[in-house]
Length: 111
Image (cartoon, rainbow, N blue to C red; front, side, top):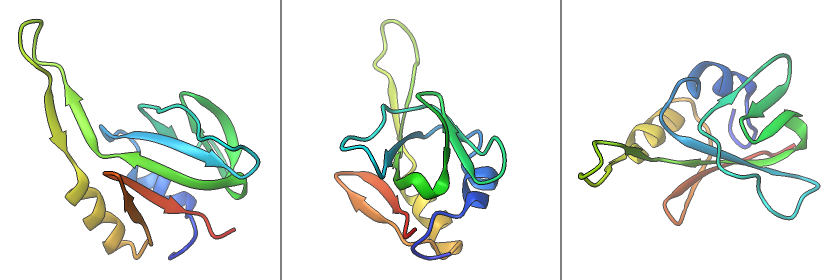
């Protein structure tokens, strides 16, 4: 699996997680906006709340923001939960190459 985004990772491991995601498409200069979810709607497609279904081959990378912000109440500062170690352990166990960039986790697509 190393070096390529495997659709099964999105389908089986990223579903219903409290992380945020964004995609960098091959033909775009800037990444998409952050999304609270990422899914595999069918076949070799990936979709986020900010991006319509995209073929996995058109994705340069998927970036994960591992910091969850949990609202506690109006007068209390949101609780920040860092899921970095959980995500890194998951990717390591799946033998997926990734890099940390300014606290974000990036999975490059080797198309």
